[in-house]
Image (cartoon, rainbow, N blue to C red; front, side, top):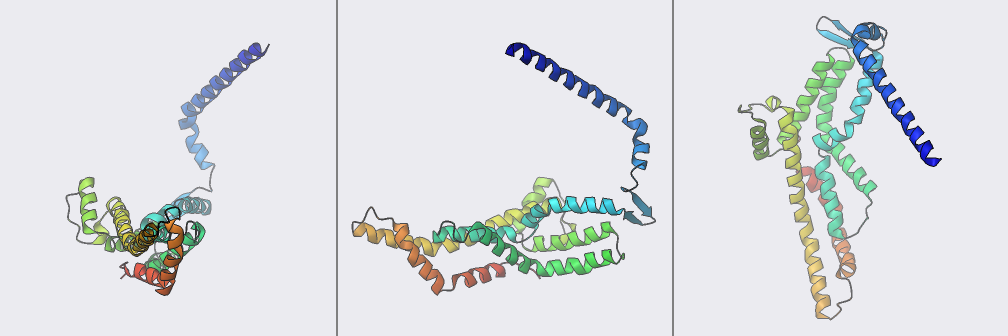
Length: 265
């Protein structure tokens, strides 16, 4: 009985699958016949060209905006100072040995607001040179996006090592020497910037790790000389590392030094 029900159910599924395939083929085969009428029936998604300017309908603008919001986290990670800051903060927490203190939410919040502080001059230029003219209808959407991308590209190129730019330029097959930052394509500037940021972040993290590593080694040597093999050196070293970090005003020193490593002129 169960086997018969299983076989009949399998036949029904095959029939439904074949029916869906037939309907899909029919739709795609006749799509060219009614595509024009179909899109004419969607007046909300219109693109109107008036000379040199292109106007988008409000629903289409909302659709573009929602699409841009979905890729905004990737842009924040890849085109701003966020990557360097969050990596340095994570390495600092690991060097202190405080496990989940500060928690991830606090580290992300600190890194995000430091990113806004570092990127403020670039964001102000984008707002003044791209957003405001576009809102006042003095600039088309394409011109606004191009102007904003040029400002972001200037920031990325200023904070990217020349060797990384040359490497990605060679990998892309570009034999042209770039005279201005605006001439560098995004496919070269963006990966070069992220690679340079990773290298810089790990260099800063290494320098932060050294003093805490010395404290760990001293505590471990003292415990071993006293014969306290079963006592965890990290448990004893943690108060001393926190004391040292507080006495030298570690958070202000770390954040101030980290911000000074960026070129935002």
